[in-house]
Image (cartoon, rainbow, N blue to C red; front, side, top):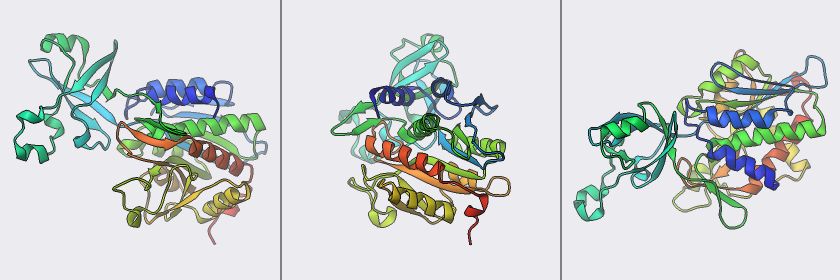
Length: 356
C-alpha cells in the first residue's frame, strides 16, 4: 500500500456512514471508481456498483462485496436542558459508550459532543457493576438548553464515535469502522488492480453494499440485481491473538498472517478450494476459519440469491470489533487484495463450481 492508497483508506474510514446514512462514504468510493470502472451506478438502496467488463462473451458474473456502513447512533430526543438521547445503530456494547467523544452529523455540518458519565465519586458500589442502558445515556454538546440544541441538531441525525485512523507500532492501524470500510477498500483496490493488469475473463462487479449491520439488506437487493454466478464477501473476523478471546471457540487467528478463508455451509466447496490453491501457488499467507452455519455477513445473503450462488467469505483479522479502537494489520489488506486479484484470472466455467 503506497501513501496515496493509505490516504484513500483513511478518508474512507473517517467518512461517516452509519447504516442508512452511508452517502459520505459512498461519495468517496464513487470518486475512487471513476475512470476505473466501465460502468458505475448507485441503486435505489444506495449500493454503489462498479463493473469491469470481461474479455469473453457471456462471461461469468463475479460479485465482490464489501459493506460500507458502520455502527453508530441516531438522535432520538432532546430534553429541556439540551441533552440529547439516542439509540444505537447496529451492535454496540453499551459498556463502552459513556465517556466517549462523538460527532453528530447534522444538515449543517458536524457537531461535537460527549456522552456523559457520572463521576465514580458519586456512584454507589452497586452502580459501578451495572451497565447503563442506552435509553439512560445522553450526549452533551455544551448547549444552554433545548432551544440551542434544537437549532443545531435534528431528530434522526446520525452519530459516530469521534475518532480517526491512526498508526500504532509496526504496520498496525487503529480506527473505528474498519468493519467494514476496510472490505470496501479492498474491493476498490482489486478493481484498480484488474484495470491495471487488463480485464479478466469474468464480468467483475465491485459492490459497496449498505445496511449490512442491520440485516444484510444491501447485499440482498444488489445480489438480486447483479445476479452473480460467483459472489465473494470481504469482511472482518475476530483475531484471537489478544487477551480474553477463546481460541477453542473461534480458532487461532492472528494479525499479519494473511486473510481468513471461511469453510462451511455458507461457502461453496469448489470456490474454497480454488481460493486456497491460489494462495498456496502464489505464496500468499492465509488462515482458515470454520463456519458451522450461515455467516453473519453479505456472503449469507449472496449465497441464497435467486437459484443460488457459489459464495465465499474472505475476511481480515480484526481486534476489538465494534469499538472505537479496532486494530488490524496493513499487511493483511495487501495480502487480501493479491489473493482476490489472482483468483479472478483463474475462474473458468460455471460447472467448475458445482459441488460433486
